Image (cartoon, rainbow, N blue to C red; front, top):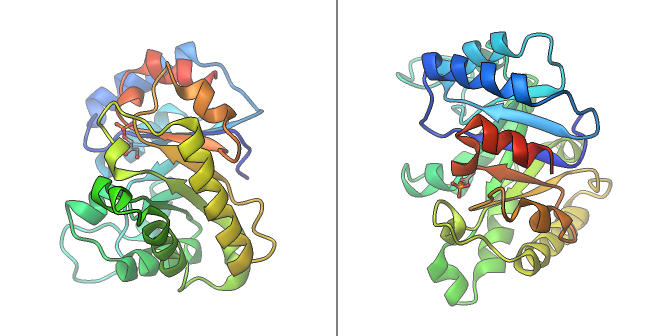
Length: 249
Ligand code: 13P
């Protein structure tokens, strides 16, 4: 169950097993269990088992993988499948993160296949959507985000849609120190919520997270923004003290 507010830490390609062990020891020491929110860590796949073992007994902390392949097994060198991620302890999976789309050229159709396979193996997909700066300046932000959302969930069975999580991460805000304003976030979250309602009545429980330069300084105002159910954090989650502070917001 995902209880709002939601705090997701995307470590990206940081913290291998040795660093992950030290990070988790420090984080668990300073962050006491909070039953009124959901906290999850998304370490690199090679550190999943380390984080899983480190948080043993801390059922308040969930675990996710940053990416999966769209097939469940086979000759796909270098890829990780949904059942393998589940077996390694993941409960959640990021799908369609902006870096997957823009560095690794993932298309909306590939994203849709990954979103669809995740729940078949017990993983909750976190569908990431967001426009580039150029798309925003061309006034195409809503159109792009709606397309990513609509195609992203198109291969899911309708009754499964209420079980996903959506993260709005404008590309221009990721890793730039320039977060969206709470008003901008609210306005896109409203459009996403309306679209989800239209596509899948009964999906009001789907948390919609904001991501992009969330920090200890702006987390509170972003979390207070209308329609923002949680945050997906990159740089500011890389040190355990900063991350614990954000998770206490
Ligand atoms: P930053 O918090 O570093 O901007 O990254 C956001 C992000 O991509 C989380 O998935």
